Image (cartoon, rainbow, N blue to C red; front, side):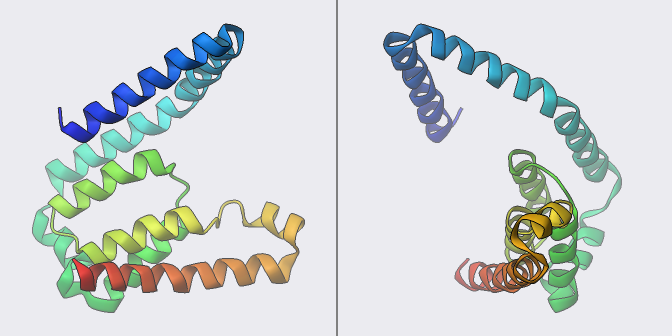
Length: 160
């Protein structure tokens, strides 16, 4: 277990103990909500783990690096940008998928664009966003987020 993982888990445990010390009833409710959320997200997590496993076993690194690696260029970046914008994967699950893509030869730029579009753009939730914010603002926000995600990815690729 890495130092970061150990630190995060110890911090979470300390916060939980403080929560029980301050208000045991609220802490128990929070744990119930967390357990329900975990059960609700579990099928998606298992599906992503299955997809990652299948991808690792059946898709050669050469194929992945060809589609989203450094050689793919702008086409690879736009491919993952659109995938990230369309897919509705929780960030918690997207990070292991991103790590797997990096291990298989995807570029840092492509993975940064994928994660950024995944978290900043809500293609699936766009109808709701349009109803709340209005068509113009919702479309503008998503379009600007798409552009900013690509810029973030390019900067990350240049830095790393």
